[in-house]
Image (tube, rainbow, N blue to C red):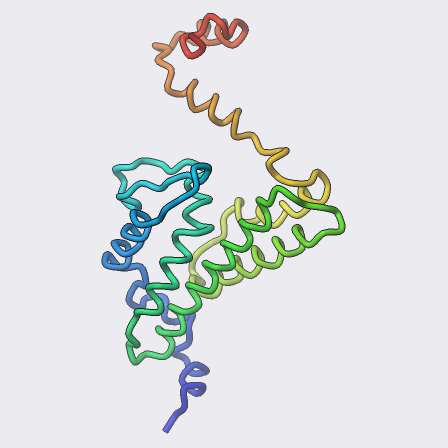
Length: 209
């Protein structure tokens, strides 16, 4: 009779279970939403929409994405895994466990990478690189048909920025991105020349009134 180890080492391994039943089902998503609604947050932490996961709430802001991946999603996934009944398929159960583990790796990478403290000889850049690299390796393991994007490559180079310039909040450009977002919503009626005038004289722009 084959052991659990034999089954994991067979052709029915984690990678080949790509088409297994999804770990994040509608029921699991509902549990995540209930967790979001029940969470009491400090005033400085971005709150997530109660209908998290629906297209109706639109694109999440950067702070909301950080909150979701650093706290809400990992905590909910751990709870879902703890309450999950075994399927009898060792590879599928192992895959569910690995999804949670790699989600925690991403949360740890975010925590280390976005820390307000970083030093040339400190552990922040090193720990960020360790968790981010393991998270990306996890994506390749669990989803072998998925092609990593340029942003994934750039994420590994954030180590160089941490070592050269310190904490990332000193170099990120959220304020400029917010300004671009406001400009994109501006109704220019295709009058590009008027927009250029507003850029030269921002006090005359409706955005600044």
